[in-house]
Amino acid sequence: MRNYAEITKRLEHLEVPIEILGTVHNYPIHQIHLSSSADTPRPILVTGGVHGDEPAGVEAVLQFLERDNTTLLKMFSFIVIPCINPYGYVHNTRETVNGVDINRAFEAEDVAEVIIVKKVLAQTQFSLAIDFHEDYDATGFYLYEGKRDEKYIGPDLATAAKTIGPIDPEDPGEDAPNLAEGVYKVADSWGTEGLAPYLLHFHSEHVIISETPTVWQLEQRAALHLMVLDTALSTLSEKEL
Ligand SMILES: [Zn+2]
Image: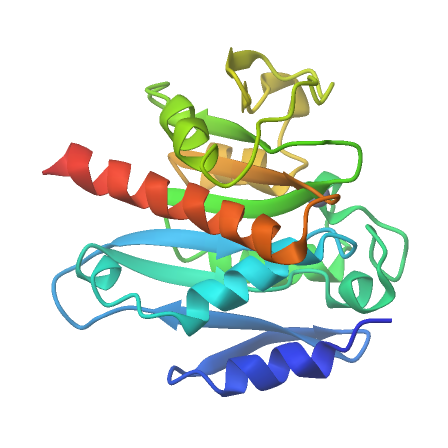
């Protein structure tokens, strides 16, 4: 069993307000909104813990919140949900308390975690949404990318992330077209049941799913997720200048 109170404690140490989006099986799902008062920066969605047995995503989100993002906040604002599946996180299960894989449930109307996340999405169109995951079978990292204009940046992300660890040599076998080494396209065949494809269809012009191998140390996995996020943000800001 993992201690969810430790996550809450880390969030309470932040100098920004924490919002509770809802409570599932007595565990609150938190949201943090990071923005500076200047201009109208582009909104970015950062999420972790959709699968409860993938703690590196939650760790990466917490580390992102705990560091100084002043420079990024000149160009972006962030909606951050550190742990979408708190019950799964505590009990180290992929699914919810009801045995539901949240990442296959975004078309369902009776999944509490999905209802809670959709409340946030209803208000915003994101420039980028990134969702942190892990792979128990992988030996290296890989990522999925979906982009409405199909101008993919995944190859640049993979190149940068190789400074943290190797790319997984195996195809993850999710029917996703291979765009480059370690980069797969969010497949049309996935429909809109997963968080990232749902976002791509309805709420975000660009989505990334970052996948780290569970065999790596937690710190290395979290570092890889943050490298993918930071490289994506720096690529986005360069392209718009
Ligand atoms: Zn996952």
